[in-house]
Length: 401
Image (cartoon, rainbow, N blue to C red; front, side):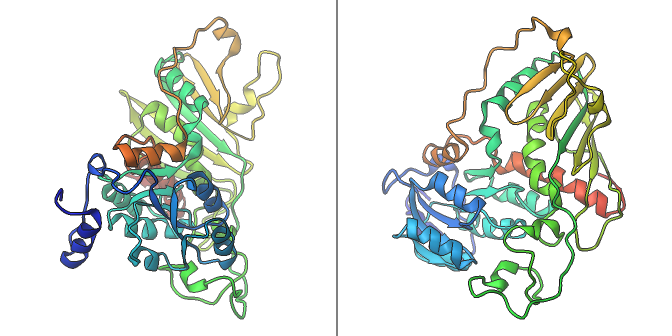
């Protein structure tokens, strides 16, 4: 490999069928300091990701919606434009890496096609649409620089909570409760429209899903309400909020998953007010991890008050319940509870360095071979756990692994 250019190695792989994996520490920057990036999905969340990496050399832009593609092309006028990511990957662009910000059902196909060509990959959350895809992505990405788009992971508050939890001020954790007030539920098939709008390539939007007439109400955002393309509130937000306890407690694979909602599983649309529970073996004891979305909240939350007597009424959050107390957290704040018990408590010294930025962390790792914090091995396990909650609900309420 050391006697071949990276482009020659990729061409050889196409001829022989071999996959040109190179450990990321072995990829020096030969052309310039700026990485050559292909951006797959440039609207909405994709536009934010593009802005975060846009100081690099954006070589190619791809989107199935011409409105988003034209807007991005106006900003990056030297970039080649594509509707089909497969054509982008097959073009002679000498890419270093891709950023994938598409609907969930096309995360794995686009990311895996890129990684099979030896390209480093940043993919939005959830990493994949299925448990099987998450396993495959983790395996395929192990010798490449990867990062899942859970930007909150880069915040200092999460670092302080991880340090706090590892110092065990509340003893062994027996329960975790995570809730999110969003509601991506109720997808139902509407009457087919005569044709898709001219700006949208409907067949490419469907990806590997069965062809069907265009319907309003899927693109650009409500696809999250449909099982075939998304996974409701849990798939949308679980990787953000569940990331904190996964990181802090270094959780592995659950042994039992249960799930319930006010209504039985619908074949088309995702549920309202879902509750899931994952049971883990953790540090010699059993830990139960709960998720609630929509209007549902943990029962124990209603009993919590601040020292001044005000109720804890957070729309979204994380509650660690231990043998000797609790830790309440969200994206930007955290508290030890009950407050009066921990008066005078000295938190552990900061030991996890501040992030240079979630996107920049990935970009610099490509240059240096250094680590990322949400590589696909970690985020693949997190995504699998999230998706198992939906799988349990659709399977009738329970899975034993």
